[in-house]
Length: 321
Image 1 (cartoon, rainbow, N blue to C red):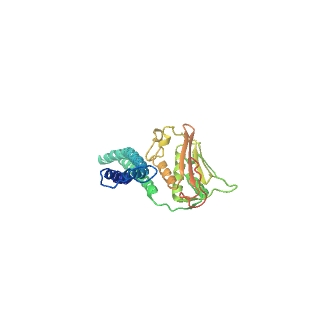
Image 2 (image 1 turned 90 degrees about the vertical axis):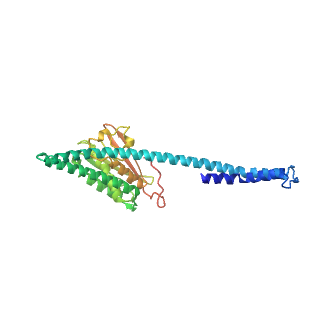
Image 3 (image 1 turned 180 degrees about the vertical axis):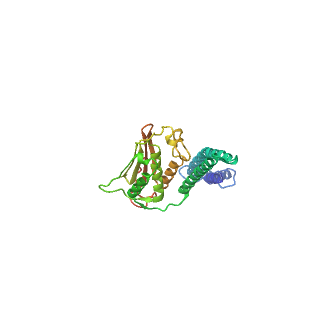
């Protein structure tokens, strides 16, 4: 507010000076003999005109700056409101995720306290399982926070080797032996270029995608990993023939703790895809997905082959994933 007031004061100052001189001349306090110019006018009139001419561009600039500040404040307010909504939504989902394991732990503790017996060992096992679930949940939340705010040690990452290693690890996942996992990488005329980034974080993101694909694909189904280079980007696809995601749920799968009705029967925290998104975006990349219920899902990642600031290498053209 103070800055806006100062801006308008400076803008109107020439007009105020001119008006003051004009009033002084009219009141006889200022010599106001006529100037010998092609258009006859009193000196006070000319000073008023000069003040108007000088103030006009300043007033225009002040009005433009005021409108710009107003738009900026409005955008800040909208962003603040959106952040508050996201925070409330996250807390609501976190409450839901914590409620079930805590209820189970209370029930199991009550059984143990009541005298144990044959159900005592099962109650202790239930408590251990719920504690492990809560530990995974908090660990995943911490990972997302670390990825979003931590410093990345960017080094050239061999995407081909990373994908081969990730797929090999995925073949050892529970149930993977009953699914067909395949990897399609370009070899000719050249392999995939390296991307600048953190190999451990990128491996974690790709591993989460493959873990999801295996979990949501029925035995006998297929999980395919494909990659190619295009316009300064490395494009990676993880495709499966799983149950698919309804269209109204698809935009929300990247949100923390979101789990659609069809996903709640499968073990998980609802943080895997949120972590993948955080890793990809920290690397200056893009992520998206297409899905058809009953047919499967394709997740697409685009990673730039040059650093996000574009200070080295070929400038990447956004592939629009």
